[in-house]
Image (cartoon, rainbow, N blue to C red; front, side, top):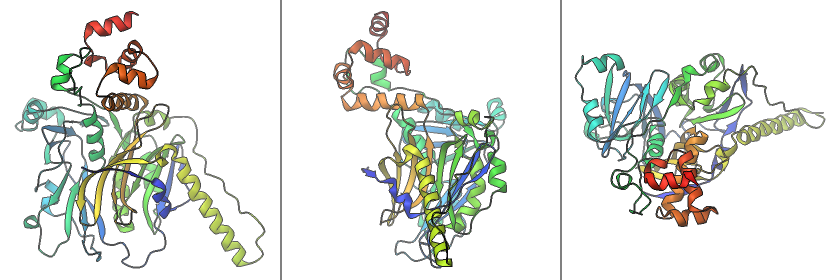
Length: 428
Protein backbone atom coordinates (compact mmCIF):
# COMPACT_ATOMS: atom_id res chain seq x y z
CA UNK A 1 0.00 0.00 0.00
CA UNK A 2 1.52 3.30 -1.14
CA UNK A 3 0.64 6.69 0.35
CA UNK A 4 1.37 9.93 -1.46
CA UNK A 5 0.05 13.41 -2.13
CA UNK A 6 -1.50 14.68 -5.34
CA UNK A 7 -1.83 18.22 -6.62
CA UNK A 8 -5.41 18.71 -7.89
CA UNK A 9 -4.17 21.44 -10.24
CA UNK A 10 -3.95 18.52 -12.70
CA UNK A 11 -7.63 19.29 -13.29
CA UNK A 12 -6.42 22.32 -15.20
CA UNK A 13 -5.40 19.96 -18.02
CA UNK A 14 -9.11 19.79 -18.87
CA UNK A 15 -11.27 22.54 -20.34
CA UNK A 16 -13.98 23.62 -17.90
CA UNK A 17 -16.91 25.00 -19.90
CA UNK A 18 -19.62 27.57 -19.00
CA UNK A 19 -22.24 26.22 -16.56
CA UNK A 20 -25.74 25.09 -17.47
CA UNK A 21 -28.32 26.03 -14.83
CA UNK A 22 -31.74 24.64 -13.99
CA UNK A 23 -33.56 25.64 -10.80
CA UNK A 24 -31.03 25.05 -7.99
CA UNK A 25 -28.84 22.75 -10.12
CA UNK A 26 -25.68 23.94 -11.88
CA UNK A 27 -23.87 21.50 -14.16
CA UNK A 28 -20.39 22.46 -15.35
CA UNK A 29 -19.10 20.38 -18.29
CA UNK A 30 -15.48 19.20 -18.31
CA UNK A 31 -13.97 18.61 -21.75
CA UNK A 32 -10.68 17.23 -22.96
CA UNK A 33 -8.32 19.68 -24.60
CA UNK A 34 -7.46 19.37 -28.28
CA UNK A 35 -7.11 15.71 -29.10
CA UNK A 36 -6.32 13.71 -32.17
CA UNK A 37 -8.18 10.63 -33.28
CA UNK A 38 -7.29 7.76 -30.96
CA UNK A 39 -5.36 9.95 -28.53
CA UNK A 40 -5.47 8.61 -24.94
CA UNK A 41 -7.55 5.66 -26.10
CA UNK A 42 -5.34 3.35 -24.02
CA UNK A 43 -7.80 3.55 -21.08
CA UNK A 44 -11.53 3.08 -21.58
CA UNK A 45 -14.57 2.44 -19.35
CA UNK A 46 -17.89 0.71 -19.90
CA UNK A 47 -20.67 0.30 -17.36
CA UNK A 48 -22.91 -2.67 -16.61
CA UNK A 49 -26.16 -2.94 -14.67
CA UNK A 50 -26.15 -5.18 -11.62
CA UNK A 51 -29.92 -5.67 -11.63
CA UNK A 52 -29.95 -6.08 -7.84
CA UNK A 53 -31.81 -4.02 -5.25
CA UNK A 54 -29.13 -4.72 -2.64
CA UNK A 55 -25.61 -6.09 -3.07
CA UNK A 56 -23.30 -7.75 -0.57
CA UNK A 57 -19.64 -7.13 -1.41
CA UNK A 58 -17.13 -9.41 0.30
CA UNK A 59 -14.03 -7.50 1.38
CA UNK A 60 -11.29 -8.98 3.55
CA UNK A 61 -12.69 -10.08 6.89
CA UNK A 62 -16.18 -8.65 6.45
CA UNK A 63 -18.92 -7.74 4.04
CA UNK A 64 -19.87 -4.34 2.69
CA UNK A 65 -23.63 -4.16 2.13
CA UNK A 66 -24.94 -1.51 -0.22
CA UNK A 67 -27.25 -0.60 -3.05
CA UNK A 68 -25.03 -0.80 -6.16
CA UNK A 69 -27.12 -0.17 -9.29
CA UNK A 70 -24.19 -0.33 -11.71
CA UNK A 71 -20.52 -1.09 -11.98
CA UNK A 72 -17.75 -0.13 -14.39
CA UNK A 73 -15.19 -2.22 -16.22
CA UNK A 74 -11.93 -0.38 -17.00
CA UNK A 75 -10.08 -1.62 -20.09
CA UNK A 76 -6.47 -0.70 -20.81
CA UNK A 77 -3.49 -1.59 -22.97
CA UNK A 78 -0.02 -1.75 -21.36
CA UNK A 79 1.76 -0.45 -24.49
CA UNK A 80 -0.38 2.67 -25.04
CA UNK A 81 -2.18 1.34 -28.10
CA UNK A 82 -5.86 2.32 -28.54
CA UNK A 83 -8.44 0.16 -26.79
CA UNK A 84 -11.91 -0.34 -28.18
CA UNK A 85 -14.72 0.51 -25.81
CA UNK A 86 -16.41 -2.85 -26.32
CA UNK A 87 -18.50 -4.22 -23.48
CA UNK A 88 -17.89 -5.88 -20.11
CA UNK A 89 -17.19 -9.57 -20.11
CA UNK A 90 -19.44 -11.85 -18.10
CA UNK A 91 -16.66 -12.17 -15.55
CA UNK A 92 -16.36 -8.40 -15.29
CA UNK A 93 -20.07 -8.01 -14.72
CA UNK A 94 -20.58 -10.68 -12.10
CA UNK A 95 -17.33 -10.08 -10.22
CA UNK A 96 -15.61 -13.41 -10.87
CA UNK A 97 -11.83 -13.43 -10.53
CA UNK A 98 -9.26 -12.63 -7.90
CA UNK A 99 -9.93 -11.47 -4.39
CA UNK A 100 -10.48 -7.75 -3.82
CA UNK A 101 -8.90 -5.38 -1.32
CA UNK A 102 -9.54 -6.07 2.33
CA UNK A 103 -11.43 -3.95 4.83
CA UNK A 104 -13.46 -4.17 8.00
CA UNK A 105 -16.25 -2.01 6.68
CA UNK A 106 -19.79 -2.32 5.53
CA UNK A 107 -22.56 -0.38 3.92
CA UNK A 108 -26.20 -0.71 3.01
CA UNK A 109 -28.48 1.32 0.80
CA UNK A 110 -32.22 1.04 0.53
CA UNK A 111 -34.30 2.96 -1.96
CA UNK A 112 -33.33 6.60 -1.86
CA UNK A 113 -31.48 6.40 1.42
CA UNK A 114 -28.23 4.59 1.98
CA UNK A 115 -26.71 3.19 5.10
CA UNK A 116 -23.62 1.19 5.82
CA UNK A 117 -22.68 -1.77 7.39
CA UNK A 118 -21.85 -4.99 9.03
CA UNK A 119 -18.74 -6.86 9.98
CA UNK A 120 -17.81 -10.51 10.03
CA UNK A 121 -19.96 -13.61 10.07
CA UNK A 122 -23.26 -11.87 10.67
CA UNK A 123 -23.00 -10.01 7.39
CA UNK A 124 -21.93 -13.11 5.52
CA UNK A 125 -24.89 -14.98 6.86
CA UNK A 126 -27.21 -12.26 5.64
CA UNK A 127 -25.63 -12.34 2.20
CA UNK A 128 -26.27 -16.08 1.96
CA UNK A 129 -29.96 -15.90 2.78
CA UNK A 130 -32.21 -18.14 0.68
CA UNK A 131 -34.57 -16.68 -1.90
CA UNK A 132 -38.08 -16.41 -0.56
CA UNK A 133 -37.11 -15.60 3.02
CA UNK A 134 -39.35 -12.88 4.52
CA UNK A 135 -36.43 -10.48 5.03
CA UNK A 136 -35.35 -10.87 1.40
CA UNK A 137 -38.87 -10.26 0.13
CA UNK A 138 -38.79 -6.91 1.95
CA UNK A 139 -35.31 -5.97 0.66
CA UNK A 140 -35.75 -7.17 -2.92
CA UNK A 141 -33.20 -8.92 -5.11
CA UNK A 142 -29.91 -9.49 -3.26
CA UNK A 143 -26.69 -9.79 -5.26
CA UNK A 144 -23.16 -10.81 -4.29
CA UNK A 145 -19.79 -9.48 -5.48
CA UNK A 146 -16.30 -10.26 -4.30
CA UNK A 147 -14.07 -7.27 -3.77
CA UNK A 148 -14.41 -3.55 -4.39
CA UNK A 149 -12.21 -3.97 -7.45
CA UNK A 150 -11.51 -7.22 -9.28
CA UNK A 151 -9.22 -7.90 -12.15
CA UNK A 152 -10.84 -9.97 -14.88
CA UNK A 153 -8.47 -12.90 -15.28
CA UNK A 154 -7.25 -13.93 -18.76
CA UNK A 155 -9.10 -17.24 -18.43
CA UNK A 156 -12.40 -15.35 -18.03
CA UNK A 157 -12.13 -13.23 -21.19
CA UNK A 158 -11.34 -13.80 -24.88
CA UNK A 159 -7.64 -13.91 -25.75
CA UNK A 160 -7.80 -10.86 -28.03
CA UNK A 161 -9.41 -8.53 -25.46
CA UNK A 162 -7.41 -5.96 -23.45
CA UNK A 163 -6.71 -6.06 -19.73
CA UNK A 164 -9.84 -5.42 -17.64
CA UNK A 165 -10.63 -4.36 -14.08
CA UNK A 166 -14.12 -4.29 -12.56
CA UNK A 167 -14.74 -1.47 -10.07
CA UNK A 168 -17.76 -0.22 -8.14
CA UNK A 169 -17.82 3.58 -8.62
CA UNK A 170 -17.28 5.53 -5.38
CA UNK A 171 -17.58 2.41 -3.23
CA UNK A 172 -13.82 1.96 -3.04
CA UNK A 173 -13.56 5.44 -1.51
CA UNK A 174 -16.57 4.97 0.77
CA UNK A 175 -15.28 1.61 1.94
CA UNK A 176 -11.98 3.26 2.87
CA UNK A 177 -13.82 5.96 4.79
CA UNK A 178 -15.90 3.39 6.67
CA UNK A 179 -12.79 1.33 7.32
CA UNK A 180 -11.43 4.25 9.33
CA UNK A 181 -14.35 3.94 11.75
CA UNK A 182 -13.49 0.36 12.62
CA UNK A 183 -10.00 1.17 13.89
CA UNK A 184 -10.15 1.15 17.65
CA UNK A 185 -7.39 1.93 20.18
CA UNK A 186 -4.18 0.03 19.48
CA UNK A 187 -2.95 0.32 23.08
CA UNK A 188 -4.91 -0.68 26.20
CA UNK A 189 -4.65 2.67 27.95
CA UNK A 190 -6.63 2.68 31.22
CA UNK A 191 -9.18 5.24 29.93
CA UNK A 192 -10.49 2.97 27.16
CA UNK A 193 -13.18 0.32 27.33
CA UNK A 194 -11.62 -3.11 26.79
CA UNK A 195 -14.20 -3.95 24.12
CA UNK A 196 -13.03 -1.06 21.93
CA UNK A 197 -9.45 -2.35 22.10
CA UNK A 198 -10.44 -5.94 21.37
CA UNK A 199 -13.20 -5.48 18.78
CA UNK A 200 -12.64 -1.98 17.37
CA UNK A 201 -15.62 0.27 16.72
CA UNK A 202 -17.80 -2.61 15.52
CA UNK A 203 -20.84 -1.97 13.33
CA UNK A 204 -21.23 1.40 11.61
CA UNK A 205 -23.92 2.82 9.34
CA UNK A 206 -23.70 5.88 7.05
CA UNK A 207 -26.62 7.40 5.16
CA UNK A 208 -26.68 9.07 1.76
CA UNK A 209 -29.24 9.99 -0.90
CA UNK A 210 -29.77 8.63 -4.37
CA UNK A 211 -29.61 11.27 -7.08
CA UNK A 212 -33.30 10.64 -7.73
CA UNK A 213 -34.02 12.22 -4.34
CA UNK A 214 -32.33 15.48 -5.42
CA UNK A 215 -35.10 17.69 -6.78
CA UNK A 216 -34.35 18.83 -10.33
CA UNK A 217 -31.18 16.79 -10.84
CA UNK A 218 -32.71 14.10 -13.04
CA UNK A 219 -34.33 16.68 -15.32
CA UNK A 220 -31.15 18.75 -15.51
CA UNK A 221 -29.13 15.70 -16.57
CA UNK A 222 -31.77 14.89 -19.18
CA UNK A 223 -32.27 18.27 -20.84
CA UNK A 224 -28.75 19.72 -20.86
CA UNK A 225 -26.48 19.23 -23.82
CA UNK A 226 -23.57 16.79 -23.63
CA UNK A 227 -20.74 18.53 -25.49
CA UNK A 228 -18.75 16.83 -28.23
CA UNK A 229 -15.50 16.48 -26.27
CA UNK A 230 -17.11 16.30 -22.81
CA UNK A 231 -15.52 13.70 -20.55
CA UNK A 232 -16.76 14.84 -17.13
CA UNK A 233 -19.01 17.03 -15.03
CA UNK A 234 -18.97 19.22 -11.92
CA UNK A 235 -22.32 19.20 -10.11
CA UNK A 236 -23.40 22.10 -7.89
CA UNK A 237 -26.62 21.92 -5.86
CA UNK A 238 -28.00 24.98 -4.13
CA UNK A 239 -24.88 26.90 -5.21
CA UNK A 240 -22.71 24.40 -3.29
CA UNK A 241 -20.25 22.02 -4.91
CA UNK A 242 -21.45 18.43 -4.72
CA UNK A 243 -19.40 16.07 -6.84
CA UNK A 244 -16.92 15.77 -9.70
CA UNK A 245 -16.85 13.00 -12.28
CA UNK A 246 -14.34 12.39 -15.09
CA UNK A 247 -14.39 9.44 -17.51
CA UNK A 248 -11.35 8.26 -19.48
CA UNK A 249 -12.76 9.22 -22.88
CA UNK A 250 -15.66 11.34 -24.23
CA UNK A 251 -17.22 8.24 -25.80
CA UNK A 252 -17.21 6.59 -22.37
CA UNK A 253 -18.75 9.61 -20.66
CA UNK A 254 -21.96 9.76 -22.72
CA UNK A 255 -23.54 6.52 -21.43
CA UNK A 256 -22.21 7.18 -17.91
CA UNK A 257 -23.82 10.64 -17.91
CA UNK A 258 -27.22 9.00 -17.42
CA UNK A 259 -25.88 6.85 -14.59
CA UNK A 260 -25.00 9.90 -12.46
CA UNK A 261 -28.61 9.98 -11.26
CA UNK A 262 -28.01 6.55 -9.65
CA UNK A 263 -24.95 7.66 -7.65
CA UNK A 264 -25.20 8.57 -3.98
CA UNK A 265 -25.10 12.15 -2.71
CA UNK A 266 -24.63 13.80 0.67
CA UNK A 267 -27.94 14.07 2.54
CA UNK A 268 -27.95 17.85 3.01
CA UNK A 269 -28.11 18.34 -0.77
CA UNK A 270 -31.68 17.11 -0.61
CA UNK A 271 -32.45 20.25 1.40
CA UNK A 272 -30.33 22.52 -0.80
CA UNK A 273 -32.19 21.37 -3.91
CA UNK A 274 -35.51 22.52 -2.41
CA UNK A 275 -34.35 26.03 -1.57
CA UNK A 276 -36.46 28.79 -3.18
CA UNK A 277 -33.53 30.06 -5.25
CA UNK A 278 -32.23 29.62 -8.75
CA UNK A 279 -28.67 28.80 -9.68
CA UNK A 280 -27.33 31.82 -11.54
CA UNK A 281 -24.79 31.48 -14.36
CA UNK A 282 -21.35 32.93 -13.83
CA UNK A 283 -21.39 36.15 -15.81
CA UNK A 284 -18.19 36.79 -17.72
CA UNK A 285 -17.84 39.70 -20.15
CA UNK A 286 -15.44 40.22 -23.02
CA UNK A 287 -12.62 42.61 -22.19
CA UNK A 288 -11.18 45.21 -24.51
CA UNK A 289 -12.36 46.34 -27.92
CA UNK A 290 -12.52 43.81 -30.73
CA UNK A 291 -11.65 45.37 -34.09
CA UNK A 292 -10.73 42.23 -35.95
CA UNK A 293 -11.72 38.57 -35.92
CA UNK A 294 -8.36 37.83 -34.28
CA UNK A 295 -9.20 40.27 -31.46
CA UNK A 296 -12.61 38.63 -31.08
CA UNK A 297 -11.10 35.15 -30.99
CA UNK A 298 -8.49 36.17 -28.41
CA UNK A 299 -11.13 37.83 -26.21
CA UNK A 300 -13.35 34.74 -26.46
CA UNK A 301 -10.43 32.51 -25.45
CA UNK A 302 -9.85 34.69 -22.38
CA UNK A 303 -13.54 34.43 -21.47
CA UNK A 304 -13.43 30.65 -21.69
CA UNK A 305 -10.27 30.55 -19.57
CA UNK A 306 -11.99 32.74 -16.95
CA UNK A 307 -14.99 30.41 -16.94
CA UNK A 308 -12.66 27.46 -16.39
CA UNK A 309 -10.88 29.16 -13.50
CA UNK A 310 -14.23 30.09 -11.93
CA UNK A 311 -15.46 26.50 -12.21
CA UNK A 312 -12.43 25.03 -10.47
CA UNK A 313 -12.33 27.76 -7.82
CA UNK A 314 -16.01 27.11 -7.04
CA UNK A 315 -15.14 23.54 -6.01
CA UNK A 316 -13.44 25.13 -2.99
CA UNK A 317 -11.69 22.64 -0.73
CA UNK A 318 -11.50 20.00 -3.45
CA UNK A 319 -8.48 21.93 -4.74
CA UNK A 320 -6.33 21.33 -1.64
CA UNK A 321 -3.69 18.53 -1.88
CA UNK A 322 -5.17 15.04 -1.88
CA UNK A 323 -3.86 12.24 0.33
CA UNK A 324 -3.61 9.28 -2.06
CA UNK A 325 -3.65 5.60 -1.16
CA UNK A 326 -2.74 3.33 -4.04
CA UNK A 327 -5.03 0.31 -4.26
CA UNK A 328 -4.23 -1.29 -7.61
CA UNK A 329 -1.71 -1.12 -10.45
CA UNK A 330 -3.41 -1.58 -13.81
CA UNK A 331 -0.50 -1.74 -16.22
CA UNK A 332 0.84 1.83 -16.48
CA UNK A 333 -2.18 3.17 -14.58
CA UNK A 334 -2.70 3.47 -10.82
CA UNK A 335 -6.04 3.17 -9.03
CA UNK A 336 -6.15 5.31 -5.87
CA UNK A 337 -8.64 6.29 -3.25
CA UNK A 338 -8.06 9.65 -1.61
CA UNK A 339 -9.27 12.25 0.85
CA UNK A 340 -8.62 15.98 1.18
CA UNK A 341 -8.00 15.76 4.93
CA UNK A 342 -10.47 15.79 7.81
CA UNK A 343 -9.94 19.30 9.11
CA UNK A 344 -12.84 21.03 10.89
CA UNK A 345 -14.51 24.12 9.41
CA UNK A 346 -13.82 22.89 5.91
CA UNK A 347 -15.72 20.87 3.32
CA UNK A 348 -13.73 17.65 3.12
CA UNK A 349 -13.97 15.22 0.23
CA UNK A 350 -13.23 11.57 -0.38
CA UNK A 351 -12.96 9.97 -3.78
CA UNK A 352 -11.23 7.62 -6.14
CA UNK A 353 -9.13 8.26 -9.21
CA UNK A 354 -7.04 6.53 -11.84
CA UNK A 355 -3.83 8.39 -12.68
CA UNK A 356 -1.93 8.10 -15.93
CA UNK A 357 1.87 7.67 -15.88
CA UNK A 358 2.34 11.41 -16.50
CA UNK A 359 0.08 12.33 -13.55
CA UNK A 360 -2.99 13.24 -15.55
CA UNK A 361 -6.40 12.05 -14.34
CA UNK A 362 -7.96 9.19 -16.26
CA UNK A 363 -10.91 8.50 -13.94
CA UNK A 364 -12.34 10.52 -11.05
CA UNK A 365 -15.29 10.44 -8.67
CA UNK A 366 -15.66 12.52 -5.50
CA UNK A 367 -18.02 12.69 -2.52
CA UNK A 368 -18.26 15.48 0.13
CA UNK A 369 -18.30 14.59 3.82
CA UNK A 370 -20.71 16.11 6.30
CA UNK A 371 -19.43 18.12 9.28
CA UNK A 372 -20.17 15.18 11.59
CA UNK A 373 -18.32 12.70 9.38
CA UNK A 374 -15.33 15.03 9.12
CA UNK A 375 -15.17 15.60 12.88
CA UNK A 376 -15.42 11.87 13.59
CA UNK A 377 -12.68 10.96 11.13
CA UNK A 378 -10.45 13.84 12.26
CA UNK A 379 -10.55 12.64 15.87
CA UNK A 380 -9.68 9.08 14.87
CA UNK A 381 -6.74 10.21 12.75
CA UNK A 382 -5.55 12.60 15.45
CA UNK A 383 -5.71 9.94 18.16
CA UNK A 384 -3.97 7.34 16.02
CA UNK A 385 -1.08 9.75 15.34
CA UNK A 386 -0.47 9.90 19.12
CA UNK A 387 -0.90 6.15 19.75
CA UNK A 388 -4.36 6.82 21.20
CA UNK A 389 -2.84 8.46 24.29
CA UNK A 390 -5.41 10.98 25.54
CA UNK A 391 -3.00 13.28 27.38
CA UNK A 392 -0.61 13.59 24.42
CA UNK A 393 -3.49 14.05 22.01
CA UNK A 394 -5.05 16.74 24.20
CA UNK A 395 -1.73 18.53 24.56
CA UNK A 396 -1.30 18.61 20.77
CA UNK A 397 -4.78 20.16 20.50
CA UNK A 398 -4.06 22.72 23.21
CA UNK A 399 -6.70 21.40 25.62
CA UNK A 400 -6.78 19.14 28.68
CA UNK A 401 -7.86 15.52 29.08
CA UNK A 402 -11.34 16.41 30.33
CA UNK A 403 -12.06 18.62 27.32
CA UNK A 404 -10.88 16.07 24.76
CA UNK A 405 -13.20 13.46 26.31
CA UNK A 406 -16.07 15.94 26.12
CA UNK A 407 -15.35 16.61 22.46
CA UNK A 408 -15.13 12.90 21.73
CA UNK A 409 -18.54 12.56 23.35
CA UNK A 410 -19.98 15.30 21.12
CA UNK A 411 -18.83 13.60 17.91
CA UNK A 412 -20.05 10.15 18.97
CA UNK A 413 -16.79 8.59 20.13
CA UNK A 414 -17.66 8.28 23.82
CA UNK A 415 -18.44 4.56 23.47
CA UNK A 416 -14.74 3.73 23.42
CA UNK A 417 -14.19 5.50 26.80
CA UNK A 418 -14.82 3.70 30.09
CA UNK A 419 -18.12 4.80 31.57
CA UNK A 420 -16.67 6.02 34.88
CA UNK A 421 -14.02 8.10 33.05
CA UNK A 422 -16.69 9.57 30.76
CA UNK A 423 -19.02 10.37 33.67
CA UNK A 424 -16.24 12.15 35.56
CA UNK A 425 -15.34 14.27 32.53
CA UNK A 426 -18.96 15.22 31.79
CA UNK A 427 -19.67 15.96 35.44
CA UNK A 428 -16.89 18.49 35.66
